[in-house]
Amino acid sequence: MSDISGTPITPVATVTRLADYRVPEFLIEKTHLTFELHEGYTDVSSRLTITRNPQSVKADRLILHGEQLELLSLAIDEQLLDDEDYQITPHNLTIRDVPEQFVLHCKTRIYPEKNTALEGLYCSSGMYCTQCEAEGFRKITYYLDRPDVMSEFETVIVAREGAFSTMLSNGNCLSDTVRDGKRIVHWHDPFKKPSYLFALVAGNLVCLEDSFTTQFGRQVLLQIYTEAKDGDKCHFAMQSLKKAMRWDEQIYGREYDLDRFMIVAVDDFNMGAMENKGLNIFNTSCVLAHPASTTDAAFQRVERVIAHEYFHNWSGNRVTCRDWFQLSLKEGLTVYRDSEFSADMNSRAVKRIEDVSLIRGVQFVEDAGPMAHPVRPDSYMEISNFYTVTIYEKGAEVVRMLANILGPE
Image (cartoon, rainbow, N blue to C red; front, side, top):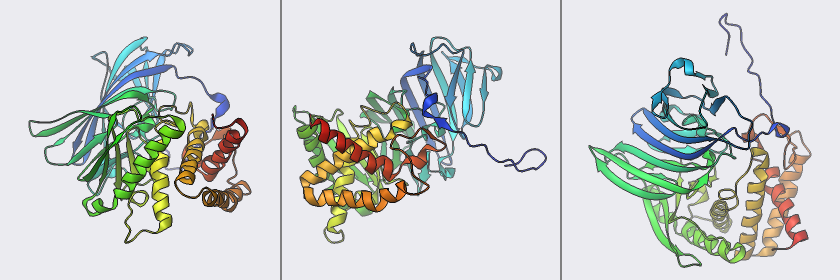
């Protein structure tokens, strides 16, 4: 990056501090998204029902997060805004003189095929996929992209008829229709969630289906989507999911709360696994298993990771973080939960030895080196750098200490 004279400019790193936390000035009660998937670009229309947060100091402007977005139109309560009504910077959209309660209509254009950061919505090998944790949603549309702003999401996905066999988002499917040569799929998640748990997948995938009957007799549809070449390697993951659902009911009394639970496992997902509400997305390495080619250790890893992301439905999704400084409150707690699950499913002694070996062999090294940091840091420059063994495994050991001191209840 350089200035107008060609002199290089060094980007200034911004530090986010726990001590600077303030409650959001506005809340988003409802979020309605429409994705129109085109060859080479995607248009995203958002309709946000926004209210002023009564717990905050009154602000005269709304500041939304947004990066690498092409703004096509902006309106408040159907009234189009002029250029002088708002200001766009590389990281924010600021709208002046907003009312106490209003509906913000925003249309942006993004380019998933060019999204090499693999944050937000990206397209790889012809398949669309999202990764929004920690701050990827701001690359989809302008939004209050922070964990303490929770909203009820509706998502409509529009694509050319026949382009994709699979078009998924969070929650329950309300409709799947074809009109004027376009396929339109409408999803609704009735439970409020922060934007980092949003998910969308569109591609040509096959599906393994099963069902689970909850402790109170509700029937839940279970679906694992993957590429056709991997369709015969998902049965163990399905059995692991059902074990995890039953265990969470028996140990924690936590029943699954939607009509369906979906897993997508694809080669092109850049993270290991992500707990998006009702639509977990995995790299295939964390899901696929077959007796002819998978080791015992790999089978146990699949069982553990499937359970970990499912357990997030309560420890992380329904009960989420106030801010990213609390990352270990969801990750450390859920690692503790998946460790206890693995111990109950297999050998408790062997599992404990494995956990202690990881702490001593990896986390102790991190604590003794330049990457040392507290389980709850006081500041960060890049939150993605804090997805560490200290946050996960050391955090889990802190939870284990609390459990041992206070007892299971």
